[in-house]
Amino acid sequence: MKFRIIVSVLVIAILTLFASVYYLSVNLQDTNEMLEAQKDTLMMQQVALRKRNKQIEEYKDQLLNSVQSEDVYWEIAKEQKSIESYMDYLIKFESDTTNQFVPDAKKGLEALLNKKGFVQVVESSGTHLFDPYTSYSNSVIFLKSKMAMNVRRGVIGNTDYSPSTRNGDIINEGQVVKVIKANIPSGKSVWAQIAYSN
Figure 1 (spheres, rainbow, N blue to C red):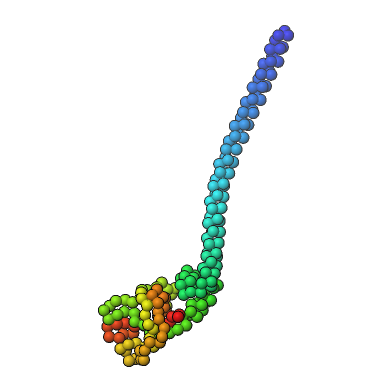
Figure 2: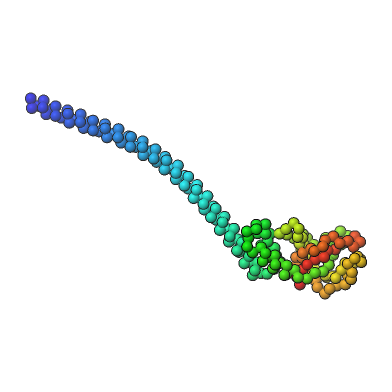
């Protein structure tokens, strides 16, 4: 009888233990499924967060580059005070009306181009004496000299632009000039009135 009681108690204990293990395993499985679902949600949120952070970083870099580059280009233009440095700044930033130094760059450029005269741009043989130089605006033409040449007060061979004597200035090879009036004919050659620095 003691044996039966002990066996009965052991069976009840084993069944209780088995029921507890089963209950815990079901709860563990439910918890595991819930954690897997949360893990998937967290992973999707993490991917979205990484993507958003990347977009923010790209936007920040873009913003910093645009601000820094305008400041850098302007500092270079102010320091060099050359036609080329002002042109580089204007080519890059003139079309955006929010850029604060554009009026100053135009003033600086005009201050450098303070002399006026006439030069031959195309010889009667058709040889071009200047190359086009990139301008910040379609309405403003700049040229770069292929050779040194004298600047004149007028156009040789065109009485509408006399006298055609030299004014004493020289345009150097590689010098950039602004065209004031283009396509002035003189026989088969072409002249232009220019603004330049000397």
